[in-house]
Image: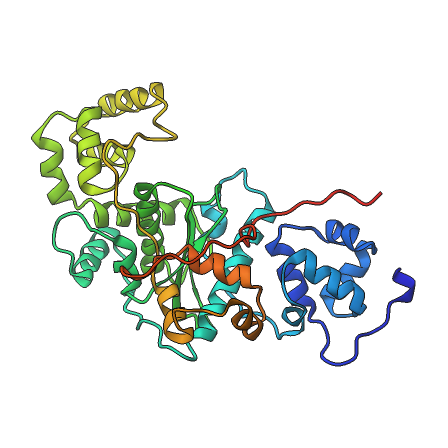
Length: 377
């Protein structure tokens, strides 16, 4: 097959887009080549821009990677730093998973940026601060949330001008944060939709801490992670307020469950906060953690009272303003050089307006799912 390759007339295929789509699906050059029945070196040439695929190869590639052929003829995608992604992903996560999450987020941000040509993004009000504790206190004032628990945290973060991108199949990375667009002036938080609300809220607060404290830092460290945690803990569990709750009664598993329902954070986060505020000794903290482990609650805590579900809203609202609430998926996908299932799955993961029915679920698998194929025989 490779011997009959000829160059496509018209707009050339952009190798950077081929690489982006391949990484989005979690494929190596070799696995993509096997599916297309070409050599791996030919895929490498396409991605470097030194060779062009045939129409047949391009159409097969588009079908495999679930993107229209027009996608591959576009200019390069906007550059987006990986931010806290490399540090926040679990150590067991392979490079393919990291690249898939990154490319999914890049496409989502590119989609949002193009929508912003028809509807305004929320003005950015994310401050640049250096002290985690004072920073969290200032952000609470900026959010105008009072002194108690923050309800609907994701919406408050979005009102600061942060664009929250839902990650659909991310089970080994809670989320990450970065600044993007050509001037690096748009704050992004990508967050997994596969975890309980209490865990998601702590992740969102943690990543907001990175945006505020570490805008000029490109590489995550243990120190920056510790600072982001301190910010998140103070934002969600202010020391002067939650300290009163923790000291009112003896801190037991039952008491932690009660406070979880009030503060919408995990029992483990509350126990850790109690130790930090010296309500619990190290020995008492270890005992509570041992109890949680014995009950199997370290990995999946019980929900004695259902916590309010939180989902990002800004991206879907942007699409509704720009495209209308009744979206012609095929037409809009063609306009944005994306697949209908990518747009639908992305917006369906976001919250609708209170009076709006949920979007119909896409019949296709989630767009950032890593795929694998049998090797060519």
